[in-house]
Image 1 (spheres, rainbow, N blue to C red):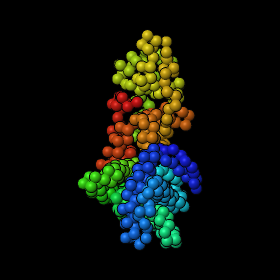
Image 2 (image 1 turned 45 degrees about the vertical axis):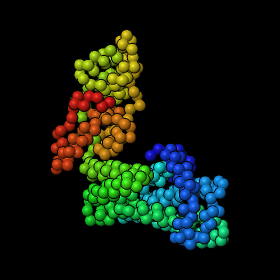
Image 3 (image 1 turned 135 degrees about the vertical axis):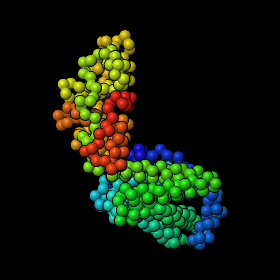
Image 4 (image 1 turned 30 degrees about the horizontal axis):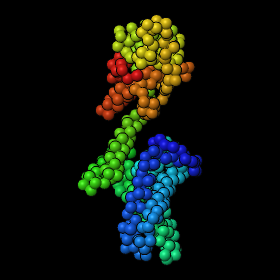
Length: 393
């Protein structure tokens, strides 16, 4: 998840997603507009002794609403650092922590598959939230009688951090409780199977959350339910793919050099357009000798006016910043590279930068389907030829 970097702590970049800039003032407004009601709840539940009328005048409700909202997100940030610190102790890399619409998100370079690692990483966040809540409660208890603003803010944060911890421990994968559930399931079953079962529970919880949010007009709960459902489905799919592609390399499933259509960089754009029409391709690897030097697509060719296409060559219009992989690259890494770069295919080059093939999503999905039905990389013969999917570039 992208966002504006605001700093680094413990070597981890901290970012703010643009949705955070919406939700922070929204939370501040909601707290400020209900400050007397919230104060009454705190008086009943904590015996706070707050005078609600003393908080209701002038700008005080909005100042306290902002202070409570900022404090809440500070607690969320500490929650994510709880996950991250434990993960780093186990040797996992944390790419960033981002605050956004639904709270915080720690981005891992890879998810742990050791159930013990995942269990302690997942549970660390709620433990930190409980600790933050306890710290806020200590300030609340020690605050002098009559300090209504301090009592309100720290009493509110004590309650909310505990609520945050409890809510996150619901077994709604991929929330913390769902990850704890997957870790426990993975003790005696394959990680992919544990993920599928935890994701099924998560999607059931998401459905219930969505219904409750719908009938109670709670938009945030509906958004959260949607996020949980999509995230659970996505991670379950990724885990299944990773398990299927274990020990499968790009070289096992790629379309080989002998089956590829290529062009030279000195080919005219007019000749390229003619070949595209005849061969029904919209993208070609560009070679100099046997070395890959670029990729050219129909859009590249269209950038040249028709009357000038004899004067321009492929080398003038091709893309040279090509993302490529080697035949020894594992298949899952290739798929992730496609997703990160928004492309449907990747050229495959050897260590001398010579083109040896192309791997596409179609190649990977064919291999996946064969593996799922009991096949192995050595018998995968259903590779799609480049002409079967001509418009992916």
